[in-house]
Image (cartoon, rainbow, N blue to C red; front, top):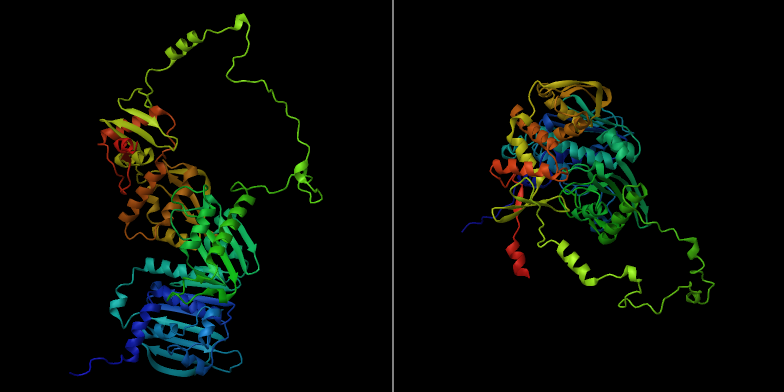
Length: 587
């Protein structure tokens, strides 16, 4: 029988290996931006076309490469970052494996122009599908200029699995933000289809966060700072009003490297205990600095997970520091550990017997007996038998938790905002907010109508971040149909001149924030459905908004007329049957 095992050709092996490094255009953005940071650049530009599918270009003013280094950089496992296995456990750079450029070149057409500071000319290299084409001298500026064109042109099966441009563009923005937030001392620019997306100047952490996410976030940020010597923690968390139901503004960095950690995210969440509504996630930007030997970044292909030597201590540090800062800025109650001056004498070390302090005088009636009635005058004597009879007759013969008023069914409010309903011999726990949402959706008059707008006496301003600005541009053609009139002014300020008639002025910004949360709208119908969904949510009362029982009675009557459905359109339960028989069995 002939042999069947054989070595793969290099270009095939590289294409397979590229699957770990290059999953989508955003993967290339991450690798190239991090290389530019490692090159000591003070300014980095990212230029993309068609969400990176046809062009990804990164231009920096770093140290550049020599002719030999430029050629070797595209070989697998060629790196300037490490020399031995021990170096992996004290990594101070972003990349170090030497796989990125080889993987990128295997699935795209790559051109590199680079020049060192003292070199008279630079070098130009072109590689196509992992196959070297040419290398020649070129006149170019100091630094490096990487162009990656036609991603996956030679692997059609991989290209067809790429998402549409909106989705891929959002992933690119995520990677760009992660690198930019970690390096506020570097100037970053980003362009998409010749349109500027980000222009980030050098500055401090606060300035970089605000430049990326918009000025409306600035008043919500609370500084976090703690230095224990072996670990330094600093950054910002947003006040509870900045929390959202969707993730997007949660960032951990260690030694300038972005990483994910469900464990440390729990520490932040616990610090906000009692301050957030269920389902809401706090926004945070937290930076750790510690000895590289105490962390391992080599446990994930994309290096987005980090293993800490003292993870439990970092968890405790993060939770306590955030909780303390929330207290200092009057967001959460904090304990006052200032010692009472009156206690100084008692705790004074000069006292040989601190327990020998003279006790306060306490008057005790040693003849008091609670089982002996006090002496009373004849006018004040009480016939206990008569008193018992009066009290017993005044007590109800039956304790009924449900009060019957106008509703045929019994209703009772629980302290947590839910209500109990007796119906057809069963008891149900009701979520009035969800019931109200179902009723709102069932009545067409509650939904937004096209061409129904009202002009505002004074225009409103909404400061968009770059992500929101791009979303606004994609949906602005639909907004006038619902009564919105707005224009995009300088510095990403959205001026709102008119709003739908049924929308209160105080609800406008909150409503727009929800509209901008969605990743993409493929069609006008998609936009209308989401617009309608958010409209109903905005107009829906929560279970805590029902104060009067008559309101609840009417809601329950309308809900019963609707058929007493158990689920909302999103599959969430409006009511639960209370298993009282199970409770009896427990006794």
